[in-house]
Length: 276
Ligand SMILES: Cc1ncc(C[n+]2csc(CCOP(=O)(O)OP(=O)(O)O)c2C)c(N)n1
Image 1 (spheres, rainbow, N blue to C red):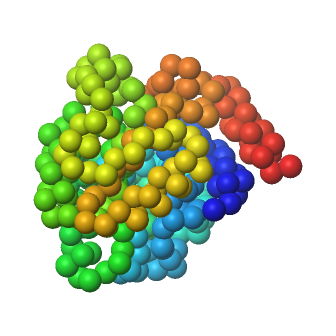
Image 2: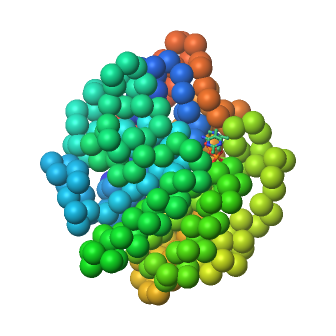
C-alpha cells in the first residue's frame, strides 16, 4: 500500500467531485466528497475492475447505497479510465449519463442503481449471495449513510448477510453525524452504531474515514475474516475538502460562482502540495 499515492488520488477525487457538481451548479457536495478517501483506497488499491469491460463478471462491485453521493463515484470512475472525466461535467442535465443518483443502466462502472435509501444495502447483499452461488471470487463493497441506517431495510440486509455467512461483502457506514435535515443523533439517535452492527453479528471495525492507511488496513482485516460479513464504520466530516460545505456539514449546496471558484482553487492547491 502506497499511502502517498492514495492521498494524491483522494485529493484528485475531491477536486473532480467538486468540478462534476460545479458543472450543474448545485448538488450533494457534503455526502459525496466525504467519501473521497474511501474511494481512493477501494479503486486505487483494493478492487478488481476493468475500465474497458465495466461488466467484467469477475470484477468487484461497488454499491453506493447512499446514491446521492453519485458524483464521487463519477469522479473516481472517470479518473480510473471508464470514460473521459469531462463526460461527467454534464451532471443531471438532459440526456446525461450522469444523474445525481447512481444508475447502472446509464454510467459505465456503476454496478447497481440506488437513490431510495436502504435499498442498495439489500441489493448489494443479493449481489454478494449471487456471486457466491456463481462460484465467483468477486467481493461487494457497499456504502451506507448513518442517516440511511434509519431505514429498517438496512438491518434486514445485515441480518440476511450474517445468516448466510456472506464473507464476500463489506458494508461501510459513513458516520458523518448528519443527514438531510440535521444531526443524525437529533433525528433518530443510533447510540453506538458500531455496537449495534456488531450485535447483528458482523465483524465490525471503526476507523478515521479520512485516513487512507487506516481504511486500507481495516479492509484487509475484513477480507481476511471467513464465514462472517464485515462492517467498517468510517468517522468522517460531511463536506470534508469543500470550503463552502465543510463548516456547515451541508447536505445540498448551492454556492455562488465565486465560492465554487474559491473551493476549486483550494482543492487544486491541496493537490499541488501533495504532488510537489
Ligand atoms: C427512502 C428515502 N427516503 C428519503 C430520501 C431523501 N434523502 C436523500 S439523502 C437523505 C439523507 C441521508 O442521510 P445520510 O444517509 O446520513 O447521508 P449523508 O449525510 O452521508 O449524505 C434523505 C433523507 C431518500 N433518498 N430515500
